[in-house]
Length: 216
Image (cartoon, rainbow, N blue to C red; front, side, top):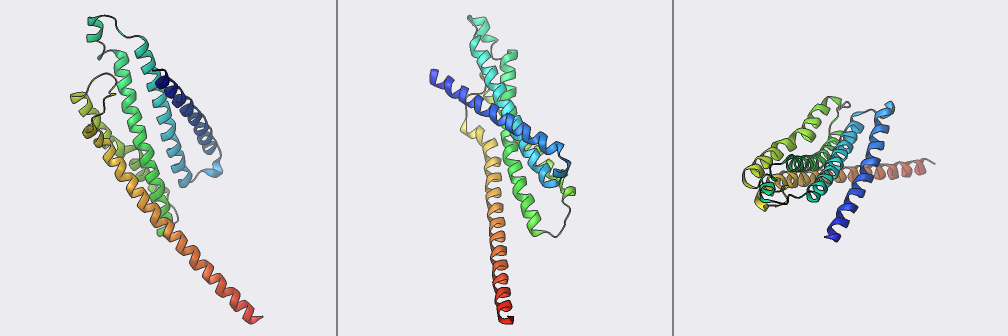
């Protein structure tokens, strides 16, 4: 019990440091107008998703601490415990946490797609794509976090949803795993393109040097 409490405390401290640093970074990027561009807007949304994840995790830990510090002492109290306001708040914080974790992965996918767009398209302005990126980063997780929430309410509505059914868990894990795979493939394609471009540029420079030497 003491070890679990210590791990939770370390987790809260880590998320608090992350929350502070990311908030400062987001504020600086928002205040400096020279940094306002589509690329940095995507970075800021990624930072905000991590900020909200940290807030959700810290809130959940505080709620859990309050819940387990005020456990009921009689049968009527236990009967109404799962439907109490504190239990509902804990479940809500759990849903928020899972949603923001999913947003983290999908905004990382947006980062990979945006770099791919920069490399492989000739369109210079990408601001018109920002709305689509926002929909992908913030909207897509709703499509699978909502069904997961409904399933948990119907089949596993106990305590603070600490019980994890691996089949139910795949409702969230499946889309996140797919987004990670797509991100990895996209990053690999981008890396190969950049590497081949640098190699080609180096070859041209070498040929140019040779020509200059021959002229000399």
